[in-house]
Every structure is written in structure tokens, then in C-alpha cells.
Amino acid sequence: MELIIQGNVAKNCHPEGLRQGIDKQIKYVESHGEIYGPRKVLVIGASSGYGLASRIAVAFGGGADTIGVSFEKSPGEKGIGSAGWYNNIFFRRRAHEKGLIAKNFIADAFSDTTRNDVIEYIKQEFGGSIDLLVYSVASGVRVCPDGTRYTSTLGVRGQAFSGPGFDLETRQMVNQTLEPVTDQQLADTVKVMGGEDWQRWVDMLSAAGVLAEGFKTVAYSYTGPKSTWPLYKEGALGAAKAHLHATADDLDAQLQRINGHAYAVICKALVTKASAFIPMFPLYITLLYKVMKQKRLHETCIEQMHRLMLNHLYPPMGNVVTDDERRIRLDDFELRPDVQQAVERLRKRVTTENFKTVGDFAGYLAEFYALNGFSMPDVDYSSELDLRQLVKEYS
Ligand code: NAD
Ligand code: NA
Image (cartoon, rainbow, N blue to C red; front, side, top):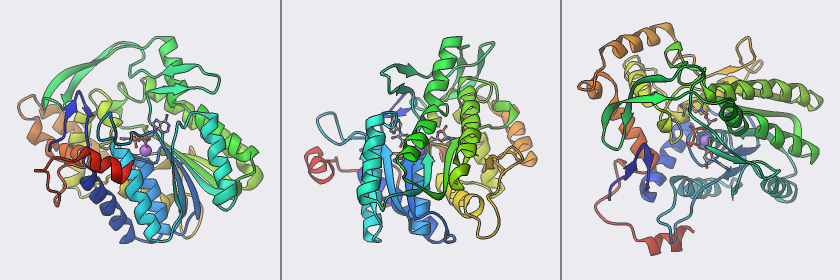
């Protein structure tokens, strides 16, 4: 059985490989420094990427009970289901083995019904409060509580921007273009990927009285080096992230009442379902990976989230570690001048012929495959999966 890729989207997954992926992340945090952090954690966007790694870090690095909210497909008539579906199940199994609470909500994070269900659960079965909320949603669509449906657009402000990028389906380097967004598209993208929904989570949790004294909340963001600004920071996504940063400051002020804090966390660029989708961005990631691996600075989601919890958000001594704009920086290694200078040198050399060796294309693919449970060392991919068996075991 093989991974099927269409465009830059994975179309199937392998449960056994996903189980190994979860175990690998658990093993990492269990052998890298205990987190003296939160006991009761709610993660929105918990089934993959940064959200899943956050959940693993606090549970297996610090013994926290967790609630995870995500939008995923179970195995059934429409196929074997999504990677995140299995990640949720394998996470829960391991957490239960450790005696930790691990509750999964497969539900729309943008809906008030979901918020009310989660609040009810916190009150009835989770001890009545949470001390950390992680907001890690990546979505192209948001249906607001008033029923309006917004879609986000990957696009630039000002002139169209073109450059080399990857087609993962054909494994070729191709020219890609980001078109300018209209004012409406820009506003809609901010609606979907800005801070409004994070704010609503905190407002409703707060009004329900389920935020513990000293409560903290984080949401994930990206800034990147100047070479990526036209396609990210200065584009529609960047506008949404700017809104998210402002929301962090609003929430921080609002949470003073309970000695609480809110932070935007600027993460490093890495391979996830969401980042594969951004034109030109994967090429930058392959150049960055090449350099960061050479300099022994390479990190994936789990290293980043473990570092976030251990060193920045819950440092054993002293205060939360931020920059002077009150943002938590996990992109410190990525943005090191020597790293970016080396990336720029590679960028000048990279061509459609040599991109597989100049950048870490193999490393990119390996992580993309692993996200979906493929290319794991100890899985037998020769046999086909039995859908009926999967439905019986996992739905
Ligand atoms: P991801 O695709 O791996 O995870 C997204 C999560 O959101 C999944 O758990 C998915 O189920 C959930 N989700 C999507 N729509 C939902 C909905 N309507 N209701 C409930 N859950 C929903 O993405 P990721 O890369 O981990 O992104 C998470 C955050 O990290 C985003 O804010 C992203 O901008 C940020 N970030 C990513 C990178 C990167 O390079 N990947 C870098 C910096 C910041
Ligand atoms: Na996530």
C-alpha cells in the first residue's frame, strides 16, 4: 500500500504507521526533561501538527489530563478515514495506559455547540477547570456562530508574487504564483485564521467559570525570514496572524483578573498538512532543513512544543520567556543570521535539476509521508488494509 498524493494533499493514511509516529513523539518527550506545567489542558486542533505535539508534550512530559478538539474523518463508507482520526485514538490509548484522562471531541471548533459541550464536560468530568488552552487550528473555512461561512485565501497584498515551488504529486519543481487578494478576501481570511475564534473560546470558558487561577493560553503563529514575507507575513495569512497577535494582547489584559496570560507563539517552519498547502513554502522548508540539519539545529513539531512547555511557558524558575513584543519565539534557531545566510546561498544555487540534492527534498518527503503513517521503519506496507476490520476496530 502506498501514499496517494493529489496536488500537495495526502489522500490516504496508514494506521500502524501513525501509531508508531505517536509512540515516537511520546518517547521523545519522556526522555527529554520533565515539564512542571499544567495539569488540565484543552487543545483546539489536537489531532495533528503543532496541536498534537502540544498535547503529547503536556501529557507525557508533564502528566496532564487533556481534552482534544479536532475535525477528522472516521473509517467508513468514504474510505479509511483521516490521519488525525487515528492519531486521536492512539494518543488516547497511550494516555489511558498512563492513567491520564484523554477526551476526544470530533467537532467543529468554530461552533458554540462544541464550546458548550466542552464546557459541560469540564464541569461534569474534568474537575471543573482548565489551566491551559492551546489554540492550534489550521482551516480554510469557518462557519461563524451566526451561520455566515467564510473561506480563507492564500494570496498576497499588492502585486502577484511568483517563484519556484514543489508539486509533491509529480515531485517536480514548478513555477507557482500567488495572486493578489481583494479586500473582501483579505477580511475573510482574517475571519478564518485570525484571533476571533480563539477570543470566543476564552470568553465562553471564562463566562462559564472554568478557567483556573493562573490560567494560560497560547495560539500558534509564523513570521519567517524576509525572503518569505511576500508569500506569508505580508500576505493574507500574515494579516490573519497580525490579528491573532493583537488578540493575544487583548486576552492577556482580560485575563489579569485571574492572574492569567495569553501569548502568541511564533513557531518555526516545518512540514505539516497545513504548510504543504502554501505555494512556494515547501521549497523554503527543504532549504531550511538542509541547513538546520547540517548545523544540528533541526526540530520537528515535538521538539518545538516540548521546548515551548519546558523552557518558555513553564520555566522551572522565573517568568515566561518572550521577546520585547511579548511573543514567545520558537523560531529563534530558524532566524539565526548564519542559518538564513546559508539558506540564501542555497536559494541562489537551486534549480529544477538539482533541487533534490541542494535542498533536503528527501527529508521533506520522509516527514510528509510520516505525517500520514507511511515510510515508517517497522510497518509492513505490502499488504492491503481491510476496511471492515478498520471500521470494527477504530470507528
Ligand atoms: P495541521 O493541519 O497539522 O493541524 C490543524 C488542526 O486543526 C488539526 O487538528 C485539525 O483537525 C484541526 N481543525 C481544522 N479545522 C477544524 C475545525 N473546524 N474544527 C476543529 N478542528 C479543526 O496544522 P499545523 O501546521 O499544526 O497548524 C496549527 C497552527 O500552527 C496554525 O495556526 C498554523 O498557522 C501554525 N503554524 C504552523 C507552522 C508550520 O510550518 N506548519 C509554522 C508556524 C505556525
Ligand atoms: Na495542530
